[in-house]
Length: 358
Image: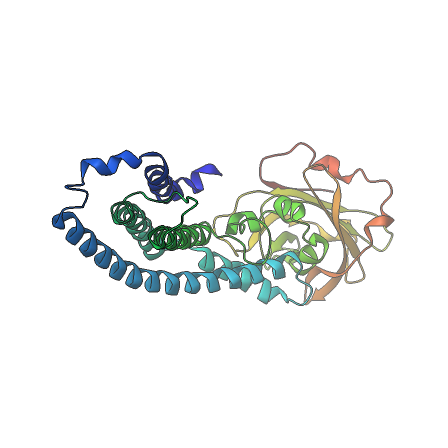
């Protein structure tokens, strides 16, 4: 975490250095004073530097704030998308897929923001240092309040306070830009998840997302597809949206409540955020032996890495010509599962695979 903030030291260091000069190195003025006064060359140069950096900082400050608010709006939109994906109660499958695709765009790094940030840091650091040196010369290091306070000491304190306030504003803007650079979540604690983290079931679980609802919306379709050239069927499973660390077991029941087919697997790798996943499990499945038809049902269980059930969905068969599709029709209360051993098929499996048994 510290590496994100080392750049702010470029502003804090000159600020502390100038304060050290003002309060602990008062004898330094003797090297520059001639007959108790600063030479005209130093005075004129100080005025020129002050005006020059004042103009630069005014222009740069306006540009920086404009860019900062623009990117803050992007992060605000990304944060809203994250909240919707963690609890997708009002989203359809198409909206979930679209949000996953758009989320990456809102978090994409931009060269312009980094460029403006480093220009702002460098110019701000030089400005804090230059203005501080000018104050040192202007005030002759005279900040000690005595019993007989004169107007010059008051003016010096006012000048020092203004310099301190401007330095604080520059440091605060740098911190703001740095937070935006590293995608600080404007609606929640911490930083926004990157697109791969938001596509990871385990991380969604850690962030208190409603995986039961999300997995219900993106649940797979299991298809028994008739091969045109023969009597056998093809067994296929299709996830409309692939997430990392999906661990599942699906059981298909025939009319006798037997389980002729169990499908299980672990999905790990995501090449493109928002993509689907399809896998053919068998190409010569004898449907007559399974006794599966349009009256059949099934369930699908999803597990976390500790093999605890995080979602339980009900499947219902639908016939389309000679094909049979098992689709999700509802959620089942997790409390109904009191004794579960189905996770044995995926226990301790870290590789990506999908398989089935009869």
